[in-house]
Length: 131
Image: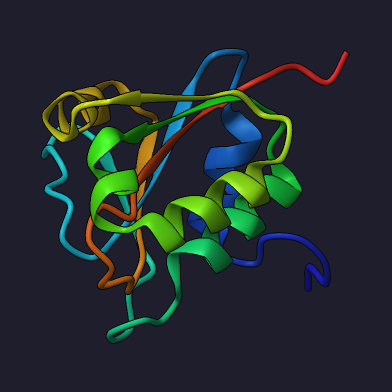
């Protein structure tokens, strides 16, 4: 039995299979997910698991070189935006419209659906390299 890191088999496999510049999305419960994009559905109920908790778990396993959020996140959920940018630390964060973010989900390796009910709690994480 795996005892450290991401325990969810599908999420762990997806992270392990990512290459440089591949994208994974961590999303709130309401983000539409294209049929063509893998869905890793972790949502159990409202707030479980939370968005920030899930991002933190992914960051423990995935080298991230940049992130993208919707500009609406800062406007509509400023507290969450602040906590997310603090969690990302030195990782550069770009903003696009929410519509653009939704469009970009179609090219992501997967969308990780959380139980988060906070508006615009979505981030695209782009894989870096460890060397």
